[in-house]
Image (cartoon, rainbow, N blue to C red):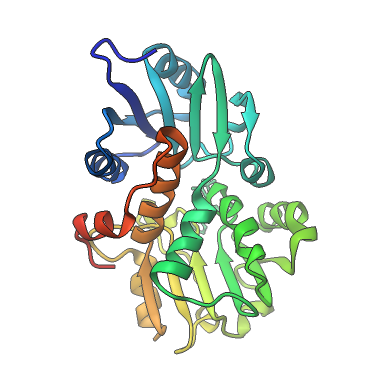
Length: 278
Ligand code: ATR
């Protein structure tokens, strides 16, 4: 079913969601590929998530992107899951098809494409630190381990959540958990990824200073028109490079678009068009 005007309906659901640039990106993709579709910004609190998804589906919704803090909560609502969504136990892309909800996760592939293709960063045999252990981290651990890093450490404020993710991925590669003040953070990493949602709330947690040296690339999954608190912090530590997640945002969106519309947009053009400096 389409909307009354025959246009397929998509959107991004989150809480908060006003910062999201997904509508702009998907509109640019649709324009570029000649797809007739609309894409909305949907602010939905956790209490109303299930109702809002079902309502969206009933009123012509064809697909949804799911963002903070709902990526794990949508899993039980899905009728089927892709392998990557199942392994991550988190989904950022839902597709509605004849009353079925299919869950997928394009975060990991989006990050990898940005790191490897757009930025030319080598991951094999490199040491990687992820800060945070929420839905975003779940989406990126599997794909990062496939790149055969030397070590992937997940540091989280509450260590239990990091340990839970490590258990889930332990067979896939050298992945470990620790808290923010662990001794393992006393040496520098090749790549430090911020996957906490602290920046959204304007918070700057006690990020581990010794984890960053002049050889470290810092990547913030968050993005903003102004530098995020983590990217400012990374520059202050003298990181080799401090990158915000615009590239990942566009790449994960392109994967979702491809799942929904069967066509992969040219991401480089859109990344330029949203004209941001990372
Ligand atoms: P998402 O699904 O986008 O990852 P989430 O599930 O709400 O969002 O996870 C948020 C992550 O940011 C968690 O790792 C959280 O740490 P806790 O598990 O200890 O709650 C982390 N986070 C949020 N605010 C933080 C802060 N001020 N300091 C440190 N970590 C923070």
